[in-house]
Each structure stands twice: as C-alpha cells, then as structure tokens.
Length: 135
Image (tube, rainbow, N blue to C red; front, side, top):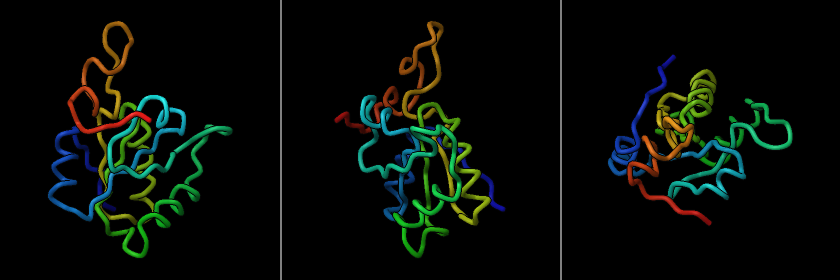
C-alpha cells in the first residue's frame, strides 16, 4: 500500500498546477464549507457531517469514485480539511481502498491553533495566501 503524502498549502497548489488532472477535495462538513470559506476549484465530499458526525467510509469512497470516474483509483488526489486531521483519516481510508496517489494538506484550510486557541493566524491555506472564496 502507498503511503499518504503530506503537503503544505504551497506544495498542494504546485501539484495542482503541474498535474492538471490532479484534484483537490475538501472533506470538511457542509457548515464549514459554507461559513468559513473554501479553496477555489475544489470538490466537496465531507468525511463526516450532520446528523451522525461519524465517518461513513463506503459512502465517502463511493462519492469520490462518482466524482472522479473510471480513473479514480489512479488520479492524484489532494485532501484538505480544517487542520489536517480529518484529511489524514480520509486519505488513509482511500489508500486502504486501493487509491494509489493520495496526499493531504497538513495545516488544512484554517491551520493550527495559536496561543489564544484561534485558527488562521499561524498557518493553513488561507493564512498562506492560497486562493479561496466564501459564499
């Protein structure tokens, strides 16, 4: 089994620019995606969401395959969540299911907590100036 690659936001953007077939997938819940913002040109496939707040691995894998089609197992996939923990779990799930080229953004969209337990001030997609939008 392949290992899950770990990218900082700038490396993730670089990979997406180098490999036009690569895909960025946001695995955060719907509320985060809507109210906090999201990367531009991202697919949205929650790892866990309301009402259960538990991962449903078969549904997650099926959704990824639906979005990516026949070549899903071989596509370069980069996952992102709030801080890197859910994307790590989701990435390991995909590798276990036979996906061969999976990475995740280790600092996530909002980054690590600062000394005041706030996100967005230390690192992460937004902090590092990567393209994003809030709708």
